[in-house]
Length: 192
Image (cartoon, rainbow, N blue to C red):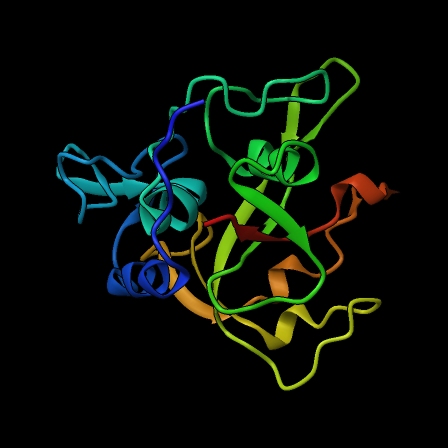
């Protein structure tokens, strides 16, 4: 395990909102680079690109994507790298960087995992956004994700980095007519 620690939630939010209205989604692109600490994008033929994890976790919290020995264990679908799946798995097992919590705070991450078919092929990519606005009340039994405000880097629209309601994290435990509790959204708090 390496010792790089995340920045504070306050700084992470400041970093996340800085680029709202910019960028294009590119799976596996962007993130945090200590040589360019204030640039979340990877330039691909003149286009600023990042994916959700690179933006909301790695760049916002100043965590390099590659982290040797991160999330090692029999439960791991991804080891040595930070993404949606390894963040959830760490939050449920080792707690090196993340804890699963039941009430959101500013700077927490809303994350749902990838789904793989019976052959291990990924059929739904996980997604993450950083909480930048809270709702008046929160009930863990029936989370009101749509009442939260997030900043996310998403593929559906351009520009990719947007601020808005977290309604996309509601009812994520269902996919293609199937329901699995393991597919649900988690609230992750970054461990200081």
